[in-house]
Every structure is written in structure tokens, then in C-alpha cells.
Amino acid sequence: MNVDIQKIREDFPILSRTVYGKPLVYFDNGATTQKPRLVVDALVDEYYSVNANVHRGVHYLSQQATELHEASRETVRQFINARSTNEVVFTRGTTESINLLVSSFGDEFMEEGDEVIVSVMEHHSNIVPWQLLAARKGIAIKVIPMNDRGELLLDEYEKLFSERTKIVSVVHVSNVLGTVNPVKEMIATAHAHGVPCLIDAAQSIPHMKVDVQELDADFLVFSAHKIYGPTGVGVLYGKEEWLDRLPPYQGGGEMIQHVSFEKTTFNELPFKFEAGTPDYIGTTGLAKALDYVNGHGIEQIAAHEHELTTYALQRLKEIPHMRIFGEAAERGAVISFLVGDIHHFDLGTLLDRLGIAVRTGHHCAQPLMQRLGIEGTVRASFAMYNTKSEIDTLVAGIERVSKMF
Image (tube, rainbow, N blue to C red):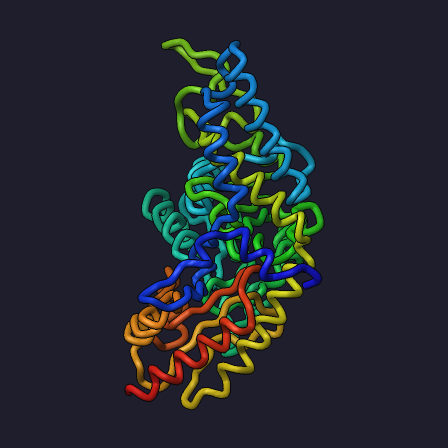
């Protein structure tokens, strides 16, 4: 990356703190990223100077807050290259975005015996909502298998389609294996069968260019907090022709046009799906985070993270009894591993004592763990502010813990 990493790190105050007397090494970016000062400053500034409920007020503050909120929607539209802001629905995160889509799409377009195709490497948030729909409506869930390298078997995917297939819902980048799935090709396959496709971009949006028109995605979801923004804010992108056909997910204020006790008519897009007061402060934070990423260049960030991941894989493989899960040709900035017979929880706990923050457990992907034949892993996930020297610290920490066992 052509930018100064140390200068970037200065934008993130938390990175200069210590944990148990050691400098913090933060490798849990797959769970949430840290926030640059300008994002937090924007939240504070809006609360102190512009705070008023949006869309409803004739007074100055309300109009100003509304302008900021809708400007944020335009920032998101540009970032993912949607055709219109009508296609950008604000939610509380990836999980709510998927639940919204499953509920509305399932109610409108699916009945008993209909099928959804997902993959073996899905996060629970792209499994459980479909299971709830299955319990409610009797739909069937079909699963795309993978090979031992952690790559989806596209020939098997093709065979899963039938006349009862109504939607494909698949992750862009695995939060465990780092596999970058060939979603453009998978979307084209779905479309050849007349089936729409939902892409879970929670783990791809911070790390690579995601263009919904280039992918031809029908729906795409992500969270602000994974891309240096605040928690509790997310996005559901949907092609306008699909969102027009879907019923609302929740009822209340904001999503209505006219209400009487006899009948209610619903608001236009995207407000039909945004019942109640939105997190209009959080959407400003998301827009600031996207501006921050744009300022450094998503291609430059991707190149830096690729270099980091390649270096980390090389260094980790030097450790005796190291087992790395996922060897896909196309992979993102996440590495899951185990060392010998050391339990992932023990390894993670002892690394924490050295100031190294990693994630341990099944990573909300228990079906994938079953496929791998393990209970869980240690996961190191990287961001634009991480460095090779931090990876050296991780490797030294693992070697130190290994000697204890």
C-alpha cells in the first residue's frame, strides 16, 4: 500500500493502548473493526449539533438531520454502485438484513416444498432464518458442498436446482476459511435457472471492491461495524424490481403512506422497509467510514491485506504442528488454525495475556466445523491498519504458548 500505515494507525486511538501491560495486537477484525477518530467525532458532533428526528419535522434541525441521513444513503449507493438510492435499505446489520429478506421473500414467493440453496460455509445468520422459514412454511434447504481446500463445488451447485428452487443465498467470503466464492459466476448460474440470488457481503465489503451491478446481484447485505463504522447499522441492497414486489418486514411509522383502521397503504422505496425512527446518527457514521475507505482506496487496502495474509500464512506454516484450515486459490484476509492438540480456547486465552486479540470457537459456522471434523479454531483476521511486525508478534506468541504444552 502506498500510504503510511503508521499514519493510518494514528487515526485509530484504541490501537495505541496496552492489554495486560503489552501493546495491543488486534486481529479480531472479522468480528468487528476498530473505528477511526473521524467516525466517532462525526457521531458526537451530530448528537451535539444536529440531533432531530428525520423525515417528519418542518423545523431546521429535522431538515438538516434528514439531509445528512439521505446523503449517507447516496454515499452507500455510490460505494456499491447501486442504480438508485431506492435500492439501499438501512437496517441494524447483516443479520437483520437477511431476516428481513427471508421473511418478506418467503411470505411472498415461497410455499411448502419450495427450496432455497445455501452453502456449507454459511454463517448462522444465513442458516437459521431459513430454518425458521422452513419450520413455518415447510420449505427445503439445499446445501452446496465444498472440497477439502475449502472451495465450493460448482458442478454440485448446478445439480441442486429444480423447478422448486426459489432463491440462492450464499456468502461472498467465508468468515472462517477466508475463501472468496465466485459469486458472479454463481449468480449467473442462478439467473440461468430464473432464480434470484442474495449475497452476504459482511466479510467482503471491507476488503475488496463490491459492485452490485457488475455482480448482477439481486440482493446484497453488509454491516457498518465490519468496515470501520458504528455498530447497529447495516444495509440491504435489493434491485428495485424485487423490492417493489416484496411486502414490508415490519409495520409502524415511517413505512406508511396512509393509515386508517380499514386499510393502510405503504410508503415508496426504500422507506417501505424502514419502520420507526432509523439510526440516523449511525448512518452518518457509516458514510464517514466509507469515505475514509475511499480516501485510502479499496484497491490499495486489498493489496496491503493480501500482502499481510500471504506473509502470515508463510510465517504460521513455520510453526511445528500448525494446521491451517482453508487453502482456496482465492482467499481473503482471515486465517483459521489449530496447533497440535492445544484447545483453541486455551491458545486464544494465553495469546490474550500477551496482548494479542484473536477469535476462538466455531465462529457462528457450526455446520462448517462439522464438515472439517473439528469443534473450533483460532482465527486471526486482518484490517488496513495491521502490520507485518504484529504478525511476527503473533507467531512468537504461538511459539511461546506451544512450549507450555
